[in-house]
Image (cartoon, rainbow, N blue to C red):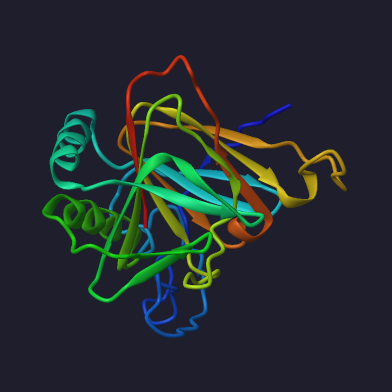
Length: 246
């Protein structure tokens, strides 16, 4: 049975020189060490520099932070602007030697010269649009992390995302992944790598949460190493959704 584990928490601050950058595509190898220093509840965390109420989502080897980053009015406006600015393509994926169309529209934006290889296909980053820069900077201000690339997925209720980990070689596994959701709320499911399939080695319940309009999900290490995540089909949902993964 799926479970939803949430508790409110103020995270300890990180030293600015030792803190890992946000999940991002790397131009060159860059190893940094994450360091957490706990502070009392009356101190504003430097790691989460913008004072919004964070929720902690935890399970064995799963460490996530969740918050509403934008109000409904601002999220509505951002969604409309992205509809005008972002140019999407129908991407392909290579599985077991066969090529399939990805069941959603995608776009990649970021700093000049960056590329992102996903399932055997390389994508170049388009220049940041004004709205994407605004969202990127809002996440940076909130988390204290920096970003140089974003993968955008556009979906309706028929579109879905199968179980996977963001383990492309361009990505630093020690850095968090930031995911901003705009539009229709959708279920997001985590499943432990040892509890997948018919021959799973352990009984670990999946963790499910709803990604709300204007929300930010921060997946911290080692979540992406130990847990797969997915977005299942929801045929009753007709409204579109835009997801931005930094």
